[in-house]
Image 1: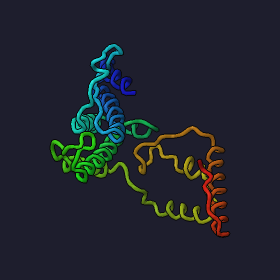
Image 2: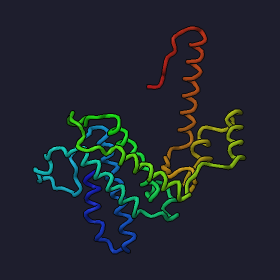
Image 3: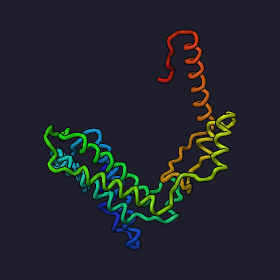
Image 4: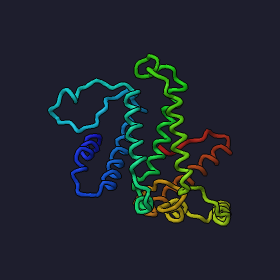
Length: 239
């Protein structure tokens, strides 16, 4: 995955396209590299940082030591800053499922900075080395989280629903039980282009798949409720 991202970034500017388009798609590539490394930092802490594709014969690069966690996190932040600056805000990107745009990048930046900022604030030692952090960057990361959130809010593109009629209808559906599981999560709340959700990722499962899940959950809930009412120990059937 990382090699594919870096190979793309190494070669994408060979395309014949306007500078703004190239900047956007470099931001998309750097967004995915930041997402990749964010997951690795959460799992492993310090990891080797690669920002160029490497060959299978490059033994030195393949077996390099882990880079310092603080260095890797600063590189992640740099990638996200680029994506937040150059990724497009055009509706043609925002209104497509799974497309990356500026607001998606800002959301990931906020999440990453909140995670790393609180890690630094409440852990005095780097878990990868067992030694104190080289510098106190907790306030910087938390401040960047706030700035990213304020940028999303300030532009006014996304917001919670303020339609009282929709909220009342949802509550009525929930009380009556007339809203099928697949309609609630797959049809009625199809979120492409809606101001409630920054990134919509559709799953092409057939509707009977969701109905089967709903039926299964209802059976489990009913079984546990019956056992508890008879004084027996409740069982869980989801493995």
